[in-house]
Image (cartoon, rainbow, N blue to C red):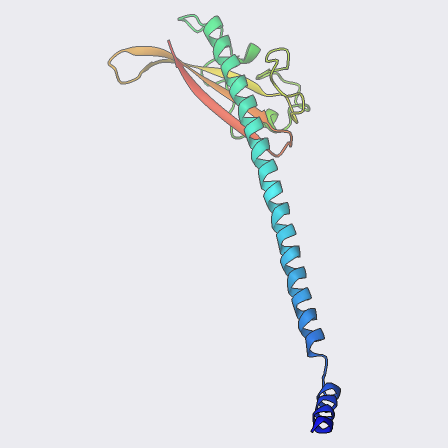
Length: 181
């Protein structure tokens, strides 16, 4: 009986076809695919975080330019609007002289346009501005004149438009505010 058992066992051992090797290789391929997918996902998430950070940087720079522009308007304000000119000197534009902020070429090419329709903000104007921005942020203000704002009385209104880039020149933010006097 012992010899029959030994012969049966030897016969089964000789019939093994390497199934365990195939199973291990399939698992190895699956783990490789999972690892590669995880690495790709991590790369996409890292780029998304960097883009979000750049957008925040551009927003903060535009907000700084907007606040500096509002302060300049408050300083230059006169009831007649005489500080606001058709040449937009110091970023102060008379009614209708300000460019369309959506198509203003100086926003997209600030170093190639020699005209000064807006006032560039520098690190000396705002010490917390990053020096790594693609271009300096800027603003311009437009005198809109006397408008009835719904309270039954008229007020002089100035619209301030600010624009800034992030670290990447493709990241841009434009902000506007209205000042009532």
